[in-house]
Length: 320
Length: 320
Image 1: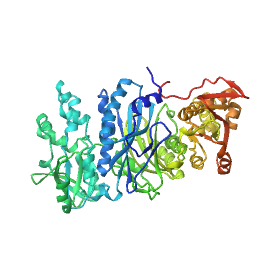
Image 2 (image 1 turned 180 degrees about the horizontal axis):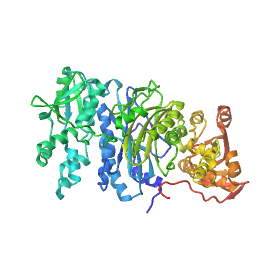
Image 3 (image 1 turned 60 degrees about the vertical axis):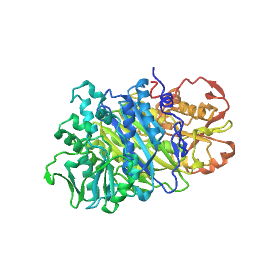
Image 4 (image 1 turned 90 degrees about the vertical axis):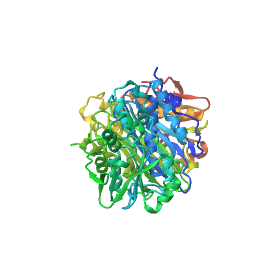
């Protein structure tokens, strides 16, 4: 049964808005949103293409989660608090079962993170999903890529490589039917944007970005933006028990250095802020110091203090 | 030659930003934008799919224009001043010639309307373009769909049906090779968002929206949002000389009532504001009173005062 566009939007994406700063939400030509005094707007957008950013046949709930999560991760990387989102959905047909799952995954994350879905567009076409998120941060406290200085420590949150490992399992690299239940697969499908960490780092981190395309590539971009280089100590890479149990050491390291989709934060902390870092994060997500910022440029890897050739480039959408 | 994603973005879409309220533009995880005191944020998004919203082989410059124009039209319909935009571009390959044309069309309109492109995403996939625009308006002056009252006049800007006629010519309905130069085709490819009119209507119009899917359907949505009905006098529909010269009267009327893509504004004006309307628009785009708001619901058409059965529904993306 084909639903009309507007009926479809109303059915799956119109929910009572719990934020008072939404003066007008879904249903007019545009949304009206109130930005509080003392805050600046933080705006990001990310697109998911079926077969490229999620597998054909992926659980629609995971696609809905992912569409919002990858965008919220950009806000986390800026130290912003999320506020509002818009959704553009291109779908081959209205597919109620798919839409219901997609909306469930999206709304669950939106509710948990305090995001109001305030508008969007729904068109018939290939399965391509674009979300835009808007967040808030006091201007002086926003985290940027350009603030790293020689002597700063380089940190990452959580563990790295799990999502890429999950993707390999889904693609059949593992071969086991039970892999669908692996925590690695769940990590790929339901990565958690590090919003609380981003906010906690506001007065602490010199520079920050999220690891969406792979640690080496993303840290390389942070270094380029800051005009510095970085040394990464490979033995310090935080690897999950699930990753180490399922893959050999060389593969685990490759996934941790080059795999995307973890949506952890990589950030730098100057020596003067190190004590505040420990205090701020006492109860939060784990963080690991993996190296340091140096003068020069590029990211170099060390193992037990000795240089290692790491020819692993970041994921590049058009260079492939 | 395949360009890397970031090189591509930098090449075509990074331009010096002329707005002081852009604290951070393209190149970080998100943009940082300053909303002035006394203004609320107006946010809209629209997606274009090749073969559905623009023809395969359409001049890339027109696609770049259209991607921004359809979004700016939503801001115009709210009475908002445009400020910032984000672009999500899914393309089968990096295609420098296409990107160059697309960027030229987009930047030309952005510069003319004072819009800064502050971020985006570029992915490999089917040709799907999503833009998000952010504008500003004093909260109390925003134009909504829900403000129409019985007795208000119903107005439209410019002329109707031209873009739909242009699309028919491009599809070969006209058959003439010279049609590519028709002002109707140009109107379809380079529709002009009515931003100045929207701002001029701030303290005047009771309700407003843009005509993106066809007058009858869109006016129907405005009426539904306001809980009223409307009468439209067919002999008052503003038709361009080009439309009347190229199509017979019945076709011209059908295109004016049901054709999309004109991006004119349809709006209502209470009797008390009619004089202010004339003053405000002395030097601007033409407007035409085409009918009035009545109690009840739905849109009815009259010809020379007598009811006419107009079974022309608005364009519905999923009902087709």
